[in-house]
Image (cartoon, rainbow, N blue to C red):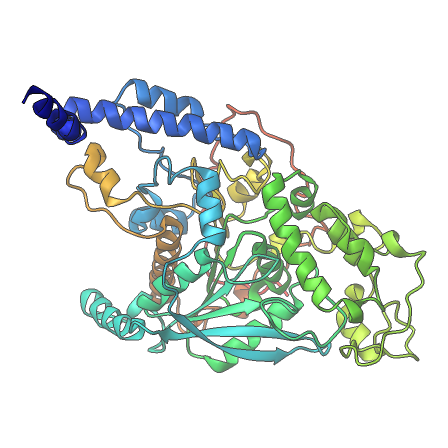
Length: 562
């Protein structure tokens, strides 16, 4: 009998242990200690994984340890810092754009910069239901770019968008987003320079459609499956194709407000477009999420191996797809053997790398490259095409001359559209934030910088409801989604309301970009262009503070600078 009782106890022992453990975890103190112990062990394991993969450790690793020791510590990240010239627009944004002032960014593990970056670039929703229809646009030199229009989802997102529009119109007593016309606004999305729609961009498409936008994604030539009709790829800061695409979108929706958002390295052509077009741009406002502000520095800065390999793989895959056609104009084998983004970019676009190489004849059946045997252009382009391309008809002489014509901020003085830049201090793909050209944001009223402590590269995940129920927020309402998406779309709405208010103050007979008018006597004199706007600013000291400039009266009426 005793043996039978002992056998029963041994059989029930695991269940009894689980019961005792579950009862113990119901005690607040034991539950808190257990949660902290698991989190601390997970963090130590993640540090080891980062060291193995050669990933830079988060600067908040020491803060993680302090939080594990003192469970009552507030884990909320510091509020983002808005760096800009103190103007009427900046004050209006601070008063009405609440998402810029109080974000609730996720904590570890979802708040880790590498996990946020990888999830935003690789992992999306379980069921991707977003549907697109594609337009192929033929540009001046014979090349083709693709425009993907979001037409809805299989789950009825369009119906939800219409309901949202009606609710916003009822709440505000006016048109959605403060539009100047009845037509819904158009949101142009520009992906990373290596092409393709990332999960981060798809999530922004979903949210924008629910808020009443017409969403269109711009794909440079040769990316995202678009056909290659010329043996010419897009340089990092060449906005010619984007300019023609924006003109086409504006012609399709002439009465709609047009705004643009770029993701990561896609900011190169967006910022270049804003600088080259100046006040003749069709955009009302623009925003960049984790932008590459200094292109040459970004290519010259060493990137963690896992990110460098992924970006190179995409670029080489695009080149190898049309390798037989490009062999007539560049050394494809050398480009495919490059081990860094700088070498790859230099091999494609700089003549100093392959000037001794004699290109063979293009093979039969290759893609139409626009080559002309009787042309005197270095790339074999027709004279009319070479004249239209200007300096980009020929490869750059060397690496420095390439960036003289492609640096994103080379014409920053000419920008006449408000640009919001959202950056994170722990971005693993960009150079340190000490290299950000802060004087540009402090002196130019059209540039606004939002700098956060966390967020990774195009991450900026909001905390989950479980984290908020842990005692950090209490009864405050928690938003779901991505903070950068919420902030960008709210920024566009506030910008539209601000410009709509400015329109009421403009006398009749004056004109500006958003349907306003400005007299000839009020046109500001053209500003002298600088060849490279703040190409390589001096690094700032870690503890250095920046003194805000004295407030100046700035009139937000677009003045023609061209």
